[in-house]
Length: 275
Image (cartoon, rainbow, N blue to C red; front, side, top):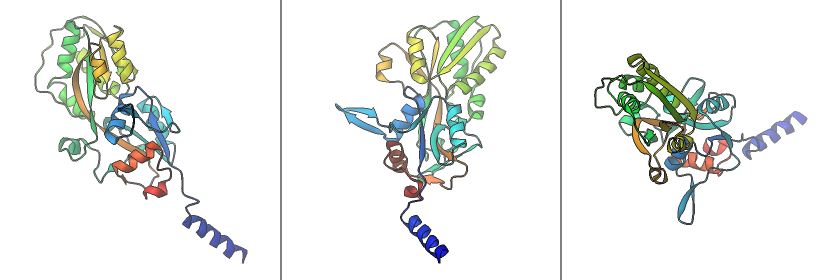
C-alpha cells in the first residue's frame, strides 16, 4: 500500500514538474567579443535612454575564456553556453538553432546566420605589421584559417619582404588559437620576426592598441563606432560562427533563437520548458 502511494506521489510530482531540472547557463564576461556578438545576434538587450544594453541575467555564471567555458559545460550536466565554432570539440555538444546545424558549410550558404567577424585592429603601422597582416589576409594563409574551422575572405597572394622586429598582438581569447597558428606559419617564412601574443578579450585588445601597448588587437565581434573614433583601423581576418553548446548527456538537440534568448535573460529556467 505504501509503495503504491509513493509511486502515485512520484507520478504526481513529475506531472507538476517538481523534478524538472534547472538550466545552468554560463556566459562570457563583459568585454568579451564573443559575448558582445552573442548578445547582438540573439537580441539579449534591454533599452535604457534609447540605448540597447546587454541584458544577460545577473544570476548567470560568468567565465573569462573559451577554454574555461568548454570545461565548465563538459563538467555540468545541465549547463548551456556558447563558443566560437572553431573551438568546438567532442567534449561538448553543439545545438542546432531553428533546426540548422552550426557548420562552415551552413554559414557559407547563409542557412546558419549566427556568425560574426574576427577582426584585427591597428592604429599605427610599420613594415613588420604590414607584412604580417598581408600574410594573414592572403591566399597562403587561407588553408590555415579554413583548417581551423573558419571562413577566409582572402583574395590576394603574398610574398614576404622579410622585415625584422618585434610584434605584440593582444586581445580576444577566441581569436588567439587561430592567431597562434598564423604566427607559427609566418615566422617560418620570415624568421626575422619576433611575435608575442597575449590572450585577454576584445575590449582589452582594442584598448591595448589605442594605448600603444600592442601593435595589433584581436577583436571577435564588430568594432564599435566608439572604438573607431579612438583611431583604430579594423580588417576582417576571418568569419566565425557561434555555437550554442550543452553537456554531452543532455538530450536536447535543437533550440530556437527565441528560446536561447529567454534562457540567457533568465525567463526560461528549466529544461522541461524547452523539451
